[in-house]
Image 1 (cartoon, rainbow, N blue to C red):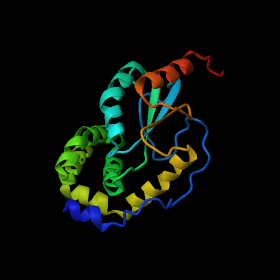
Image 2: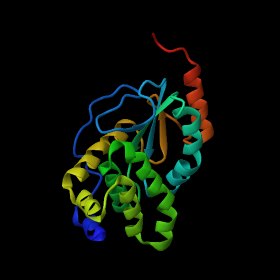
Image 3: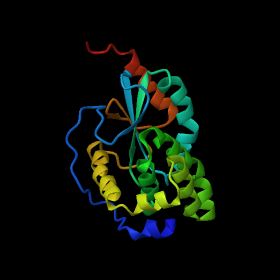
Image 4: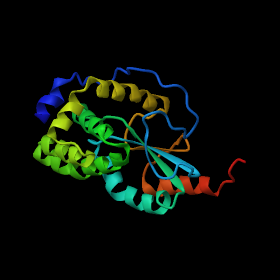
Length: 204
């Protein structure tokens, strides 16, 4: 039934369904999913796609070390945003399932999607991949089907594409540190950018 739900909706992305108001660098908008302390000195915004191999590499290799060094100690708050990449239909389905999850499970769904991505490509069977994401979200198969078939969820995803446009993000993974886009999203460059901002005096 997951396959039927996946293809039932008109997953024609690219038409932004709504505008997003201007935001200050590093400022959250409604619907953002986050990991880390709200009062952290630095905000890192990560644009990822569940079908992007480079995103999977970043999430499974760089993110655990970055989280342990910066996020868990309360120095950085991570903001998760989405930009579907090819195949967009599968990326969109994964994103929608992640956003159907309770906010505290969003990262768990990302973990399931990124960890299972290689096997999904090898088998060319997206069903088990989406089911694993659904389990991480706390959804049974009926819940996954309902999530994917809900046109409001697709409209929400389309509307949030405006955030990527506003941040001039055209590919994934992309990282912004306090609203400033990095040329290199990998761990060494991310750490350097964050360290520089942590060392700078904070505005009173």
